[in-house]
Length: 430
Image 1: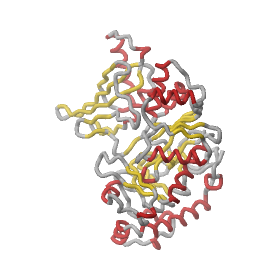
Image 2: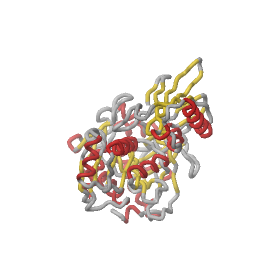
Image 3: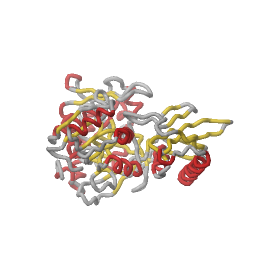
Image 4: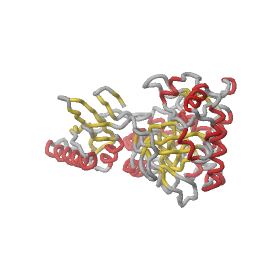
């Protein structure tokens, strides 16, 4: 199903013409932002110098520190009286990023969400429970208005009170849910503890944190849903930037509204076609807060056109963030790699925590792993076998030695929002 078939399937020369037209408009729009006016002046670049889409490489990057430096309204390209909504990031690493929206921005945002929801088969008659935070976090209201746009019955349940969430799914005949994958796993766990099932559920949409194919399989098995990956970031509106179609071979990124590049995080140069790198996005239709070449920090790759669903180019699933990457004894490790290995082992339960220490000038990684109740005998001999199996599997994938600490089922923290699974005691908390 399509919400806007013309735009969703636009490819080739027609897409390039539209992108260039909208890029030119965006360059005139950013000239209203003092930061960009000065940045382009220093670089000796004007809108007229960008004669093709390839010329976008001449433009400077924008990063989160730039946006934080413009706190609160330094990146607005319109008067504040034209801003009808404000969202912010959490600000856990400094000043939050403030994002303003005009009425047209909100309409564009809900259009992207409408495309996503329709793409996975949702329509009038479906009951949608939105189990993410409402408020300054973009995930709640972003999905909410897109769902209403296509005529879904929306339950804005937000987070928390998991048993009540489960009761609503059962009592209201909910057919689709949206939450973080880690919270979905917790819902599955509590549902099993309650001894109930969720027969009306058919679609689960999960995002806001990296998750693996192994976790998808587990969520589909335990919740009996068709699980789809959602990608977004506050600086590009919020959720809705890219989404999986039923093929589940990458996420369609809406190229009529977003111009994408993949670069080497260190050099800033574009990587070869199909290689993984950092995703860079230039939004093409943002009124209140236009950006150029925004470095998302998310690691992915571009996938060539040719999806059987008929839609345009895709990105691969996000494998982590460039700033989330752990360097352990000179080896690059993403938490999503650890999660993928653990989810593939039947002895492993629902949660794990990664703890990094520096002992005698060497990095040491300890992983606390909950055991699956079916394998938790308490016998030391059995525990030693499981520890060895997990350690060997991780060494094969990561190429380094880890210390495995097995803990009882249910003993590690549960998360209603984004999971915080890595504690770096060398000085940083993820």
